[in-house]
Length: 510
Ligand code: ATP
Image (tube, rainbow, N blue to C red; front, side, top):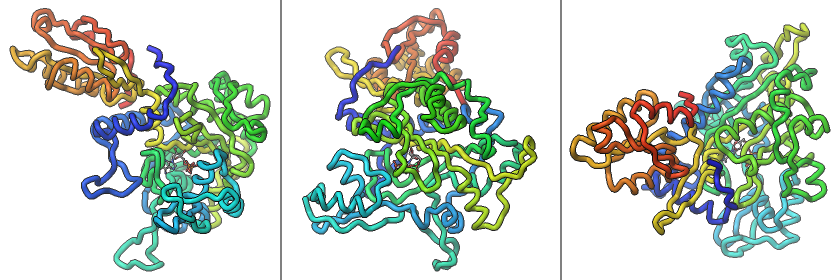
């Protein structure tokens, strides 16, 4: 069933956060000790969703491709890695402090909030000037704000018993750099030739000044990143391009932003955008299309997505071209994930700082090259939250408003719920044996507490697509009632038809 085309209301954010916390899906970490902002834990349904999104990503981008190798790097790394990448020097956010309440804020966020403009890429002096010019004060108590200071987002730690300069280390702020440091080993082990990619999923840590919007911006989060290595002269030689050239998606280009059309999304195909040189290289265009296709495959509505090109001022020091996939949140179009052309910046830097050769012999051209890189970088928690926002709907049943999370079945926390109509007369035993059998192939929730209506409601609001009820007829003729979350339609089918029905809607990735 098509998802309802409901306009995202302001209250949607609050409703989804409340649902996550009330149902123990995602909630503030260490809550019994009053916790610390920006850290979140996942409960039973939340962790299943997280595992499934990650599994879908890994299957789509790693297992199903001949040109991709997987790896997993460490979280705690020596400073050399992060000096080479530029993070120690410049992974900073602009911080201001209120003279009254001493709260700290991101200056760029305050300016953006007050003036409804984007200040990404503006020099700090310009942001400071805007703060002064528009008399921006503390949003909480109108106190005067300090001058902007640069605040480094890296979490520092020490390795071993002595905590001095020699034992300093960092928690990684992105997974990407480990792919670069391990590039030669993974290439050798996988024997991949250019072009090929290395993929990694894992935790990253950023000491965000003002974590906000639930798991959209937190201090500990998971990323799913790909570094795709290409011969520097072959960025337009992409044999996979035809597979995505017809993908249609809203775009907000540099030219549109120069005209002040920052909120627009003009629908265009990936192929046309490349032909018109809106997207600089064929490989970049390919990755934009591939990413949109996967995001749609896990259920995100394409009309809520757009590709926004970074403006020249905004581009990171390492990037010649970057596009963000943005989602239309209730607080505006914001970055869901990004796809950057990083050139050979990282490999060259690691070569310089480590003294190791990071070049590769290209069999085809017989040249030794430092490959160029296209980097699709996904935030897993931000994506999960976005999937929940996108899937949230309400249905009025018997004068009661019920929440229905219309998640794609492939990322739902369970494939099927099994309920005995009653606990007595052997129904619970039968339901338990049905659940056990289904568990061999599917993720199953078993529930025998409360009325059937309540049990349906409980699984609807965490997004389980199918619910099977075992009743007296099941004992007689081996049939069950199967109910579809999205239509609440019920149907009588045979026990052995349940797996077929579930498989029709679920792509299982293990
Ligand atoms: P933002 O501008 O929102 O701070 P960014 O441009 O710094 O993000 P990247 O460094 O490109 O983000 O990281 C890649 C992805 O990792 C982001 O698109 C986002 O999905 C995720 N991500 C980054 N920072 C956070 C965070 N603090 N909390 C949750 N997810 C994050």
